[in-house]
Length: 160
Image (tube, rainbow, N blue to C red):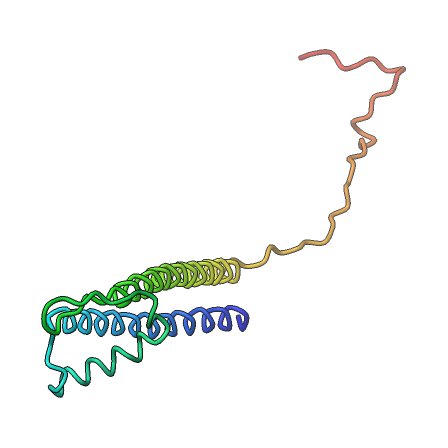
């Protein structure tokens, strides 16, 4: 019983952690998309929202900064291919994490099903009374009684 509880708790905690990381990756994807669109449309960098968006973008883009050279268009419009690359990589991580969550959910369901099945079998076994054990009965062989014995000298009685 304790082994089942420990396994179930471990799987449940891993699943909860995976969901938290998955939620973080979704937020990162939204920030990347937002930053990509703001840069592409040449948003005014002096606006408060744009400053916040670019600051958030800088944090999640740190590992990918400088991989590709941004393509500048007329005005302030920039096509930052590093952001697109980061979106792809974070997306792949999110898909892999989703597969992990599904696998953990399958394991959790299987563990619970196995536990419930074992509990049902244990309950059924406890409900059936144990077979009573009787002491060994000696085998008695019948011995012919003296009145029914026929001797070889006397002929059998005639049929009636």
